[in-house]
Image (cartoon, rainbow, N blue to C red; front, side, top):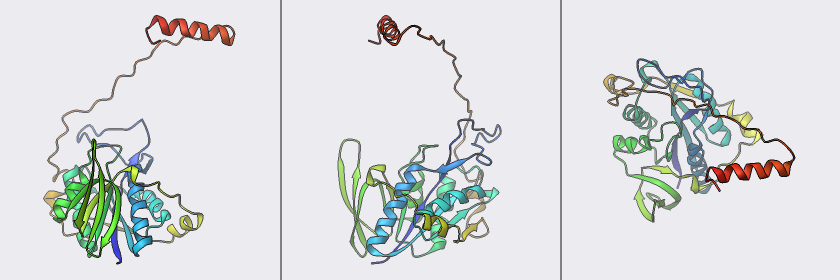
Length: 264
């Protein structure tokens, strides 16, 4: 059983000094340092383990500006085979619906895909929506919040879903879309050799002309979500008290103050 797996990943910002476009109310991603969404590393690790067990190939898929290539390189360095970046100004400002539509069209373009893996959510938006949206556009089964994933037969797999108050074991038919939890595995570190090899691999860049997409369903035009307003929380400066004296005296004074504020 050889599997053709697609892992959809996202680059998320690491800066606390993010900018919001005043017109679109969307996050301005260009120029900001980014890293791979942590949950996506679990999805990559799950794909790598399936490949080690059953053989096949793993393609990374992401949508964003050109600097997302660095995050795709990280995934290639972990051991993935191929990568595609969906990058175009026409894709900019997409909400989860428009993003899911473009990703689904790209997966169809790749062809003969058996399994699509996502992290359970991205740490910047926290919606957990894109994976299920992709499954709807593909008309494939969706299995979310998966903590264990096992191959079962040539055309099906079994999974354990870790829910809030229960576990659910489920068998599903391939092809399918799965979102994985961080409890599933511990992502591996790239080896020096794989890091070197990752820069020898070509990342394919696809835009709206590379895919059979409807121009009315991509980017801002295809995004029904409307952000009415965005604001940053006010920074409140608090008084700082420095405790003087010896260590014992400082500890006694700290305990007195903590008791006075009912924290002890």
